[in-house]
Amino acid sequence: MTTKKSGAAKGAAAKSAARKGGAKQASASGSGKVATKKSATKKSAAIDRLRRAGVAPVKARARGTKAFELGTTVERTQKGSKKKLPVASVMASAATARAPVTKLIIIGTPTTGRRRVSAERTLPAAVLTPALSSVIEIAFLEAARKFVPQINIHPRKIIPPVPEGKLVADVNPTPPLALETSVPMAVMMSEAASVPGGDGGPLTDDNSLVLVRNVQLSSVADNDAGSHVNEPSVASNGEVVFYTGNWYAAISLDGGATFKFVDPYTSFPDPPGLKFCCDQVVHYIESIDTFVWSLQYMAHPQTGENVQRLAFAKTEDVKLGRWRLFDISSQSVGQPGRLLDFPDLSVGRNMLYLTTNSFEAGHWRAAVLVRIPLAGISSGTFTAEHTTSTENSGFRMAQYCATRLFWAAHETTSSLRIFSWDESEPQPSFHDATVASWSAGSPPYSSQTPDGRNWLGRADPRLTGGAKTGNELWFAWGSNSGGANNRPHPFVQIARLDAATFKLIDNFNIWDAEAGVAYAGLASNANGEVGVSYAIGGGGRFPTHVVGILSGVRKEVTTFISTRGPDNNKWGDYLTVRRHYPNQKLFAATGYTLQSGEGNSDAAPNFTLFGRALDVS
Image 1: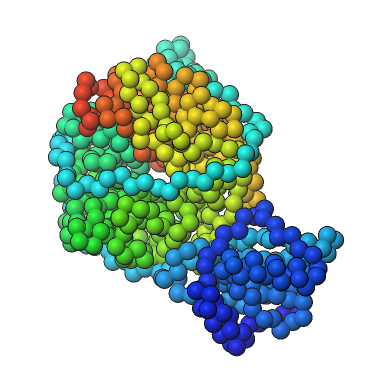
Image 2: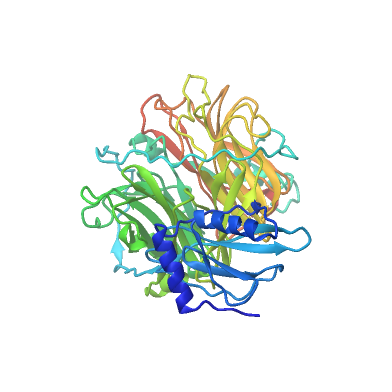
């Protein structure tokens, strides 16, 4: 049997919603239940509860069938059956829809006489009209630009607190981390060459981690361009490495052995009324041989709006400093009067994705995701879509998702909201996944270095890493001390999930008995292994950068160790790890440490290319 919603019924529903002050967005957990009996009184009570949640009942033609309208979507089910009937949808303009759409499906359960609320949820999507600039040439510098503080750099925006969730145990606690000694590339090859009759191949254990390249960009620290909130990012293809931080950018044409520098403040024409700020991210798109570079601009002094600028260049053009620009403005993604902040990039089979938060008067308002077809980037004829959530902040995308992007946000301290968007679908959907309990940060995160600095004084629980490998999703974030296993110091929690069912496979912790761990970035390689870049410090350690491979035979090694703690008690907000091209079995990672004696802008970033001994050639 099929039913469709008549125009009269639609009008009645709209009038009913208007009389009640308009439909409100409601959120339903996948495990929520509505207990009812078959009496008319109980049914009416259940309907009243839905009405109070902003769900307006719509008269259905078929007997025994009830339709509930929520926001912009209508869903019908048949009483006494789990089978969904065809849906008649009423779609509002996606450009003006600002909250997730939730489809509440009331499904009868004949064996118990009770009803279950199942959640099938989507986000609205809208099209934006971009414009690609002509080619702009930038200059290379021998040294990093000396940073001159800008008085109008916006203060850090605070994300909403994560609600306390139900207590969920960790059934398979992770042992504490065990850092190993890395094998420098030169040492490995010299050992092999010293063996009579050897073929020059590696002699170390196949699973050992080899640091193919581990180089500090010292000019950044020497010229006070290295914020202690350094936020380094990297992308690499062959001998070309492009590296960014909060206030600087750099390029290597010899595989990361040496670097020249780029001034992000002056390299490109400023958007009207705006100046460059910070929060740079880079990525490489192998299928169209294109580097993408994201730059965040300051808020306009009158409107409060800004842009997330994307710059694109083929590998050969990167060598020549030739880039094309595309600006994503607050207005273009439905966020007028708001600042776009904290971007991230991810590459799919046919799409480039960017996420950002929007803030108004210092308060979080929405999380935005933009997707851009790679064909348009390659041809110069752009199209783009965006989707927005006003319920979940701090989107974090999984890297290398192929044709279906996955991303996550916190729902509570024991559940993640997992979003997905197939490249062929007009809008994304989301599901909630249960994870082991963790601590959101009250009192604030703390980990004292030997010189009495709290290097995690800025830390918060936002997600910092995501990766897809096979049919698994890995998402990482920083937890305060405590959690399901009562960890003694702040640590990194990773949810390892089934990408098809969104069920938890494993709750993975990166933790230490004496030190805090934070800011873990994740990515997968061509072997399906999950690589990581993070920082550890506290107890007897100054902040230290670590890279590793978490899946298979777990291995983690240090790259550089600080000589002091941060005077301003700040670190973060993210580190990066990417696939290296063309050998996608290797990882390119970023980190930083403090090597000088004083100051708040002397962080020394490092470029680290690493992999297992078996995969290094």
